[in-house]
Image (cartoon, rainbow, N blue to C red):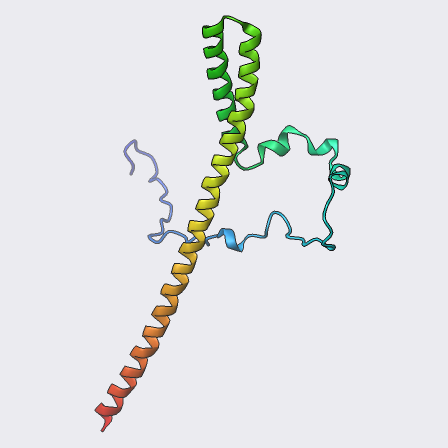
Length: 161
């Protein structure tokens, strides 16, 4: 009987070994964008580039999914606020402070975007170096295992004699 009387409570089966979930690595996933090489190697002109741009490309959802967009906007808004307020406090001219604020926004956005891209580039380089180091480590393990196997065979031959 249980604590409060009545029928005994049902006990569910508990497994000691947790179920293993198969790991999914980024390398195993299909690419988000296809790497298409240009069919012709002519120099692109501004007119050709402008023909490819449409109004559907300029949406907020496209920019939000762009890497480093958030960091660039935060840096731009911070620079806009700081430069606008400081200019307003010094010169007491709202028009001048708005101009400085807008300039600070654009400058801060560019600086923030380039800084983020630089950090991402370094991160990808570090990942690539780690992959190469891991490959070299695996190759050395395989080579040392083959050497150990040869030494073991020689030892076994001498023991048989």
